[in-house]
Image (cartoon, rainbow, N blue to C red; front, side):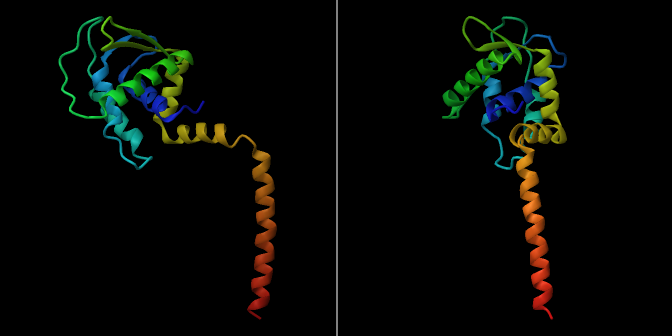
Length: 166
C-alpha cells in the first residue's frame, strides 16, 4: 500500500522509533512536528533524514506531561495539524493504535502488525520502490503495448539511419 507523503513519513518514523509491534510508546507532539520542518527537497534523502530524526525522539512515561519544548517556527500550527490528520488516517487504516492524554500534547502510539510490516517496507529503498511500482503501474499490459511499439519504432529508425549513411 502506497500512502500519502505525510502518512508515509510518520509511519517510517514510528517504525524506527518503536522497536516492537504492539508496544505502546508515548511521544510529545511538539517533537514530531519537527519532522516536517527540515526535510530536503531531494526525495531520495528524505527517508534518511526521517530515520535520523526518529532515532532522536524521546519516549515518555505513560500519561506524563512533556517538558516545555520551544517552537519558534511560524509553521508549527500547520505542521501540528498535519500530524493530527496523518495520525487519524493511519489509525483508520488500522496501521497504528493511537491514544492521547487529556491536554492533547502527548500521543501514545502502538504499531499494529500491518503497520509494522509496512513501516519495515518503507525503511528500505528497494522495497519502497516495489510498493510504488505495485500501486501505480498496475496495468502492465499498457507497458507491453508501449514497449512493443517502441521496438517497432526503434527498428524502423535503425533501418532508416542505415540507409541514410549509405
